[in-house]
Length: 129
Image (cartoon, rainbow, N blue to C red):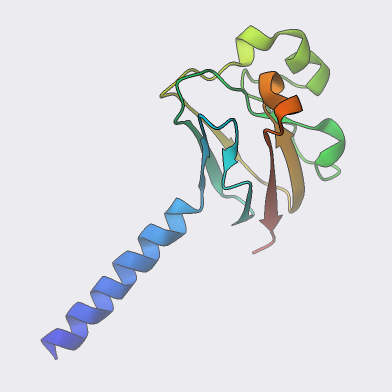
């Protein structure tokens, strides 16, 4: 009985850890978001962790978020134009984090302003519970 209980507890802990790991996106030194696409439920908070030695941004493409969804960008800008106009205010330095709570289901496209042309783009799919 103890072995069964221990195995069940271990399975629960491993499942819990793996679930929380999907809610983190790393900004890498390879100028990429890792993973490039994640799937989370509505209401989930996604943490963007800058694991590189250079600054990055997390900036939503205004035309790639669901209708009625809140716009998001590091620096708390209210539009893509505002984020692009003030790059320095949106930079996430090495070792820093930025969090976004997704309250509307749909697909969200985002990018890093200084590294967009090098392919630093990502996607978050938010599913209804």
